[in-house]
Length: 242
Image (tube, rainbow, N blue to C red; front, side, top):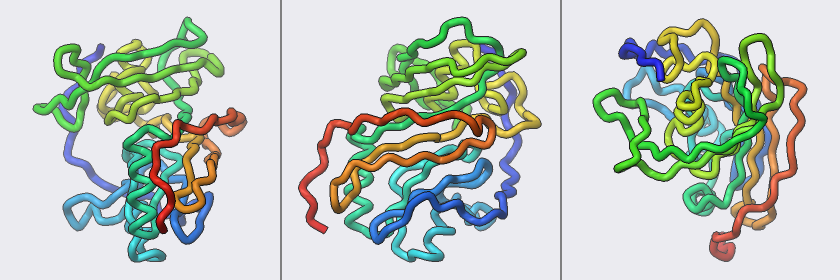
């Protein structure tokens, strides 16, 4: 895989468009996070702006239950009540949710579909990079399906079965097809385009009613993609006590 030099310090310039709310109720907000917006605030004042802090302006008790990378756009769930937070977070930890991503990768993928199960661990001296390590890495599993091939890129549907940091980005890079615009795992540490990775579909159980719910967020770089049916995940959550 191509080696890249260390990234310069983050110069954070978040997009200023209003939040694109897909769904809201008394327990949670589901939004379509734009690329370039942090999921949660950073540790310094210049990194305070984020999807979470914007939602907290409307719901002061809001808390994040999962995250998307800075460059990744798409479906992000934020709990608006403490008990809802615990139940939603549990679903992500127990892999009860179902996720579908869209990505544009470099090069023409020959196989129409495939799977990667390379184990991942933090590349500590080069964090936040992750690396493949068969000795100490944690299990990671991704399915990919080719949707369209163009001159020198391929549009793929990615289905992660685990939720490791940068999982989709590392797996595609190790297939020799890094995601377009990826400064960490692509050949260019300063790409001119955004990271072409989008959280397209998400299925989960509502934290109070326990109803299976499925959400779709339109994708700017693949506007004509159609969603697939998401089968309910294996239910491990406790009976509702809200």
